[in-house]
Length: 591
Image (cartoon, rainbow, N blue to C red; front, side, top):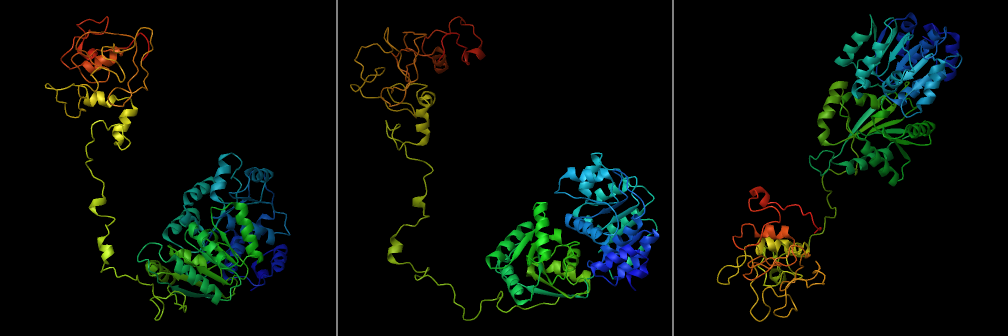
């Protein structure tokens, strides 16, 4: 049977002959007459059997009569990936070059303004991915009332990518009276449910058992052992070595190398470049112009090896693809069918090899159960030895046995012994050593804050009777060295505090006897009464408060039980208790 026997027009037959095709494939023989009759079709066939031409050729003849209206496409083709949508658009250009049909390609990665201009002029064929189509429809640039033919291609891939809710929403926007063509390489229960929902009395086409690989594809598997144990993703280095050995052993004209993750695509690509292979990469994170340019170079033969993710596994029609390499075993068994379906197309012989590790056993079992065939194993001599090769040089052992220590080593202290561990309880400081460079960080921090820690923690309660310092206090100086209340360099009997006409003591000047900074003294609230707090935070029987802020004196004298310092001016003795414990607001000068 030839294409002329299928009822196609002369223009289409001429375009098919120009493309070099003379005999239709099995799915084309069954699908083309049914589409011309206007029947709904449920087609199930593996990739590489000519499904794209099975619906594009009759659609060209159907759409040849009629004219499209602005923003109202006459047919709609939904594709899961940008590459597959661009390939279908190329098929319409190839087979419809003798017809004056207009088409629009709505995919991400391209300027939306140019796509809107094409739609507003009216298109006969609208080829789109679900996301971009719904985006333009939500903006009011599309009207779906005039769609006569709907094609849902690679529906199982749409199911895997999560596009089924979008597809259901798009189908709900279309008119009920239409022709629906539903194609899938596999037929899981979810796809069967969608087919029953979208199709009306469909004609089922099965040119081969579902989820079977083409007979023209020679399969093989290389099992790689590694020393990473059961670590997920282990053996990557050994797998890359086995992949390079396979490429060198095979007569590779052009090949696709599939990885499960985008990160692995980049790693394998750089590894091939370092070893002198002509390779490129393709995955979903790349910009659309870069992806298109890479595919064009690969089709033209400028690039021999293309490392890619599953974004390129569906629908890519590369002429005379010689090899397919699975660097990773696919986690979904259906993806294995689509990957190896890139080779052995149009009756040509192709070769597909998979690099696996023992940890991939469950995925391999799922693939073999789906295809009903066992993947034959291939042995690579010297690629990745499963055990150390006899006679191979081993790692050099240390010259000194670890079990017997030399006398010098025995005498040397260990690096992890208790003697080198920091002590949890530091030794107490000597008197007057708070300001030393070796002082703990806590004391140095208190010194920078102006000695507030000393007033609060050490000198708040004053000295105990009998001249013994309280716990945590520094011992008082001996008589004759410096009297209490006497500043450093001050003569005995000299008044403590600023003299009349003299500036108050600066905050950065040292306090007597302790080498710490003294807080700034203000000339307000002077009181020369007996038994009041001293400037450096320790209580003295004859000390006086000079040049202090009354709020600070009030705080420090709370609960002391001694002293007759007057209360805050203007409040009286009947001040509530909650006001006595809080510093009142100073209406005078600032601190």
